[in-house]
Structures are given as C-alpha cells and as structure tokens.
Amino acid sequence: MAEAEIRDILNGYAQAWTGGDLATLMACYHDDFVLHYFGANALTGTHVGKAAALGVLGEFSRRTARQLIGTPAVLAGAERGVILAREKLGVDAAAVEVDRVLVYTVADGRLRECWVYDADQAMIDRLIGSA
Image 1 (tube, rainbow, N blue to C red):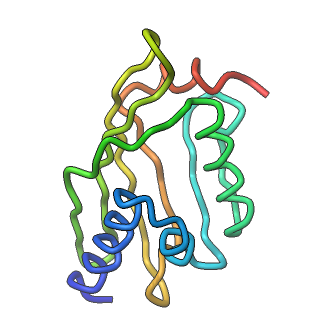
Image 2: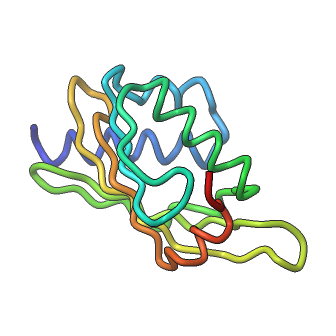
C-alpha cells in the first residue's frame, strides 16, 4: 500500500472524528478490525473484530468521559500510519488533557488494526479501573 493512500485514509478518519461524523467514522473500520489496548485496566488486551473493538472504544468513552480536543498530527509511512490525538478525560476539576498516539494498519481502504499508546498510562489505568 502506498504512503499517500494510508495518509488519505487516516486524514479522512481524523476529519470524521473531529467533525463528529459518526456514520463516516464507523465506516472507516474494517470488519476484521483489531484494537490493542495496553496498561493494567479492565480494557487491557487485544480486541478482535469490529463489534468487539467498537464496544471497547465505547466503554472507554463511558468510563473516562472522553472528549476529542483535536488531531494535531497525521503521519504515514509505507506500512503504517499514526494519528496524534489530544483528548480531555474526566469531568469538572478532575478533567485532564492527554496526548494519545494511535498507530494504524490499513487494508481494503479501511482501518485494519490499531495500537493505542497513552502519554500517561498509569492515569489511564486509574480512570478506567479494574473489571
């Protein structure tokens, strides 16, 4: 896959995400999407399949009151692409802004796999909690 194609797919995803276009956002995920969440929390692990991965993303949002601030960078190479996301997690005085690095592979014009790297994994683990 060409670097330009990966960049275009990630830019489209980032635009849908920042624009709140849920239908387009959901269409960006491959049916065989795989999500890798690190850390030591209830969501840690590898989540296989679009439904399973989206369920985990929804649970992450519920547990953290996640709000996207922006996607300041989209990078692409010959095999993978990266979105740097800035998000607000938590509510009121407990809310914090965090940087998250999302590394993607692409197949069939859609996001196929994602590894999520958080700038402060210990804080993420506390917000999510255990099972």
